[in-house]
Length: 133
Image (cartoon, rainbow, N blue to C red; front, side, top):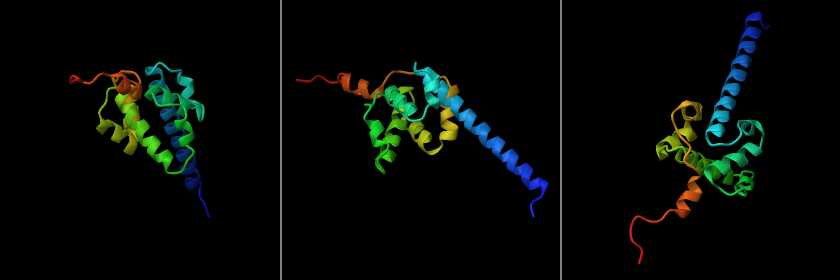
């Protein structure tokens, strides 16, 4: 029923799948390293989300929201938008991270983006441009 050709495609597909996963892990490792965090943290389940929340400056308890259906989608969108901002990228780039992560995560990892610090903390501590009376 199955030929050797079909088995070969399965092996090639599996190897390609593994290569993509390894590349994605390497990209996340580089992003974590750019942010001054240990790269190995990107491969530890759940801890990587906690470190990513630290990178963008969100509180640790947002990790708990990742286990709540529908709330996890909202939190993920906010974190991706913040991730773009902490590396000096636009909201459009953040939307690219959400919709096309297989393109925008390597761009963030290998591009010239510099880590600027947590955006959530920065937005609360900055002073307004206009005088307050």
